[in-house]
Image 1: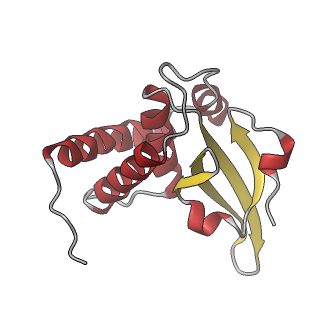
Image 2: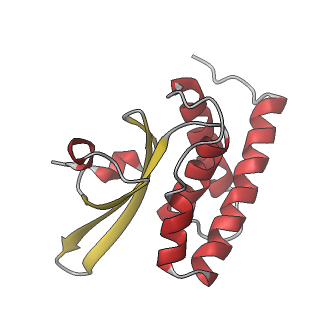
Length: 147
């Protein structure tokens, strides 16, 4: 099946994602983790608040596409902050997870991913091997368990 050509809406969302990636990168380099946590845990989405699979997938694709085209390396934390901000701005109740695991050669390794209603938006493929250390906003205990 042939992939469809990006629509003007796709391009606009990718441009928004690029802007959020820039802001996320600046925030990661200038703000303490406690302030980033406050921003990511903003208490309520601003709009509708439903868990829309179509919006989640479109935002995930836009963030990944924008991240591939930046002239700098974009890490999972920047992608997660960008996707989380885009979803929450649209009123979607996304959760940004911060996880960790111990590796033989590198020691403690961290990973960030975003979910919306249990659907992985960005970083979810790699998330299964990480223990959840924090969720923003705080997720109920069962949602935070990973195997």
